[in-house]
Amino acid sequence: MVELSALRVFLIAAEERNFSKAAQRLHMSQSAISQNIQTLERTYKIDLFVRHGRTVELSEAGQTILPMVREVLLAARLLEDGLQEVNNQIGGELLIGCSTSAGKYILPTLLAEFRHDYPAVHPRVKIISRDSVVERLLSRLIPIGIASRHIEHRDIESVPLFDDRIILIVHPSHPWATYGRAFPSDLLDQPFITREDTSGTCETVMEGLKPQNITIDNFDVVMELGNTEAIEMAVERGVGIAFVSEMVAARGLALGRIKKVEMEGLDLRRRIYMARHIGFPFTRSQSLFWEFAKSQYEKLNNEIWNSLVNFDVTV
Image 1: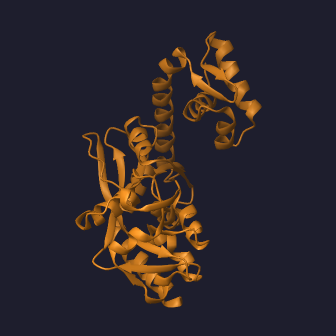
Image 2: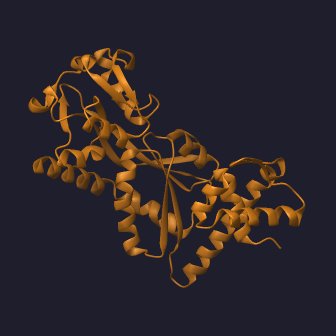
Image 3: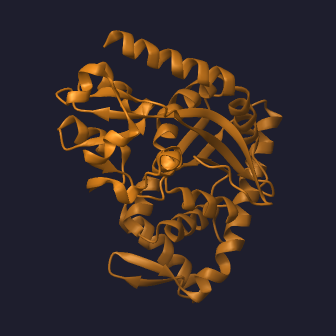
């Protein structure tokens, strides 16, 4: 009979399409991953993967059994959850897919508070793109996702998690740093650092600038980076100016490495959502975290903005 541990190795390898990455996730050696897969293949006389150097792809047989493996492992998790509940224990893995930089900053605080009440729960946050959050929720690869957009799909439930503010940051030696204010039209003459135009930050900025008839094509883009923290670092080094989440910028502002500039007539805010597949049966820990996070909306927003005010006062 096939062992659950072998099925889990297969599933993670299928998700990562790389045995080395699967080994990192499972805290195993790469050779152990290969041996588990080879044992399954020899036992049932099938090829589960097609090898391409360091990467692998699912074979036709692998694609066929993948949905069944997910169902088996989900049933095993629900069984374990039921056994723990009999003994009044709440534990297990809590996997969350997150696509926003702001989400990366708020989730540790939220999860730490949740684990205070449920220390046997082991959270794992996977940073992926917004499209990947939607795709993995629909494929039931993740039970909970965090994204900077309300996901419109009949099988997805989205609820507000917290509100994020996008601000303009500049180097402390920039002419705007002293006065702290500028007009949207002033942006056009500045070296600009941006995220890709499909990111939530970029979409929020462009939507806010639309009444000013300003588009991304009007900017002098000197650098496009796929990571908000990297953008903040580039501004610290005087490469250009940029719009980022105020939470991402908070540390740099507190240390005086960057300065915030208010845009006249421009208030850029976006709502961050938590989402789940309505047909995905939650374990007890997932259900408890979902309800806990929903209940924290007002508290999260008050704490976030109070902490950012304190940062500004320190500076």
